[in-house]
Amino acid sequence: MKLPRTTLILILLALGLGGFVYFHEIRGATVREETKEQKQQIFSFAEDDVQSLTITTKKLTLNLERNPESSSNPKWLIKSPISGPANDAIVSYLIDLLVKGNSDRTLSTPAKELGEFALDQPQATINITLKNRQRHQLILGKSNFNGRFLYAQADPTAKPDGNINVLLVSTDFANAVNRELSEWKQPVDNSQKLPPLTIPKPTPTNSK
Image 1 (cartoon, rainbow, N blue to C red):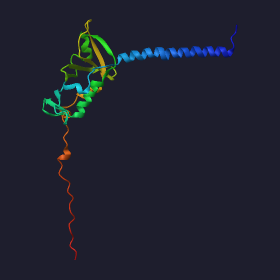
Image 2 (image 1 turned 135 degrees about the horizontal axis):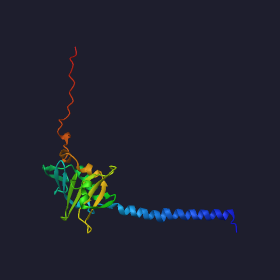
Image 3 (image 1 turned 135 degrees about the vertical axis):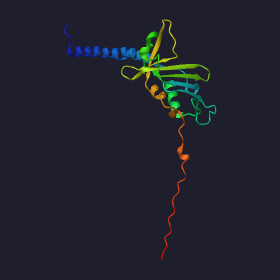
Image 4 (image 1 turned 180 degrees about the vertical axis):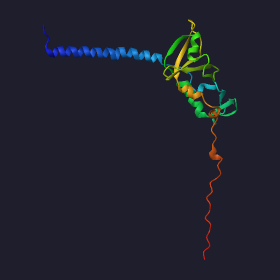
């Protein structure tokens, strides 16, 4: 039996709609869930939990501690290689990355292959000590092939199969730690050192 043209069009529309629902809602939800699982938060502590940081780069090793006078500025102090107030904005930027940073994906890699990611001789290592004495570590290796991410390790431990989890993290981490010592120091407020502005008085003229 030949179907009317209108009925045939309705059947085709229903099939098309069903295919759209499957690929967009069902299949799409599965893909989105897989992507969500890949992007995992690196650490689970909060900003206020951090008590101290030790940052080791190829240029220097820097020790930072939270100021015990919590109500005063600066919030952070440099303990070594010099002693003095730290640049709160620079330190806060790094801590914000540690607290909110995600791994784009995780690669399970044999420990002997860490050299391929420059994780055996990293560009930087960040050791974090929390107020409850828990310790965490983030190791930063080289950039990936397109320069969008860094290879990294968070709290590196070998899994039962002997492999190591290698993360892909934001290159902002490299920008946050690869700094000169002068950048970590609290900026000097030169406005307080400037002499007061004096306006010369006009010289009286002699009138004849």
